[in-house]
Image (cartoon, rainbow, N blue to C red; front, side, top):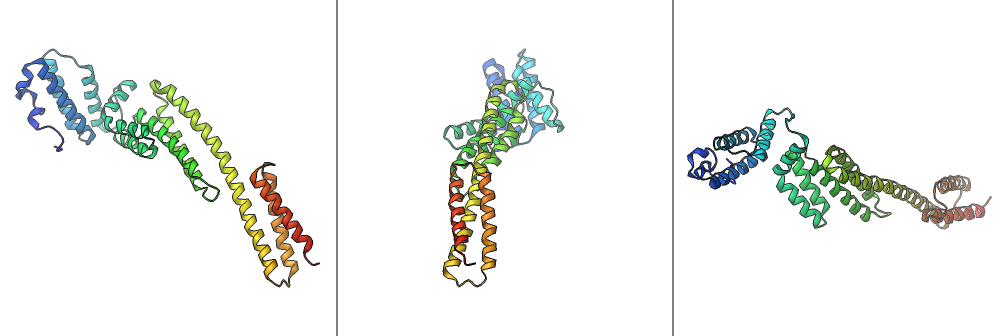
Amino acid sequence: MPADLPDAPSYADPRNSDSWRRPERRRAAVDRAVEAARLLLRDGRRFEAAALLDRCIRILDRHGSDDPQLAERRAYAHDRSTGDGQTSLEPVVLQRVIVWLTREELEAGERELAADRPWAAAKRFAAAEAIDPRGTRAALRHALALQRAARRAEGRATDQNPTELHRAERYLRWAAALIARAAGDETLRAQTDELTVRIDTQLAELKETQAVAARMAAARACLADYNTFVRHYNESQLRDYGSFRSSLATLSGRINRLRRTCPAHSQEAQMLARLAEGVADMQRNLPP
């Protein structure tokens, strides 16, 4: 057994312990056994967990005690033991048991969110999903962490480093997929609806930001080519003006096509306007 589980006599066979002779001690022993079963489930040892919870139920039945929560957890352990992904539990009950099972990861994820470490939080919630991917709370909080991580990525993006915008989009689309998994949980409906609106709005804004970045990148490419033309014109003794004029006309066409895609008063439109003037001036001054 794992080192962090109690010694076998404390839960393996409760009938061997004097603690079961008093109700309060019997309850404490059951609680220890249930926690041991939870750790077994987390460790993937589902048959052992189910057998341990069976023993706890039998002992409580013998003493006339009823524990619906324990019955839920035993049913979950037996369902996981079949390996077919089916469950006999109602959705709300299943989610309650998954929260119990993944308590450490969910609590750690919330601490990371509170500390404004969204990517660390996302890893914690992903760890909860690895234990049982049906957990809707983990999916919802994971989506929230990714949405916040996307905001961080957008803040790091610059004209010279637009790759962060693609990273932000990837985070948001991942978050949207997680939201879809959580949307079936009626108890989380208000939260999933709110986050869905937030993600959709952010994706729309991001799409426009990416379009601006793409136009600016294209404008900067035109600027680089224009500077090459100027340098070549000033530093070289041109013999083939026809070829130079043809290449300059091609650059002019690129600039004009790009200007038609830019909002009139945008930064990239103003840059392209200055470039168009420079190209036209150079064309006018070329020898015939």
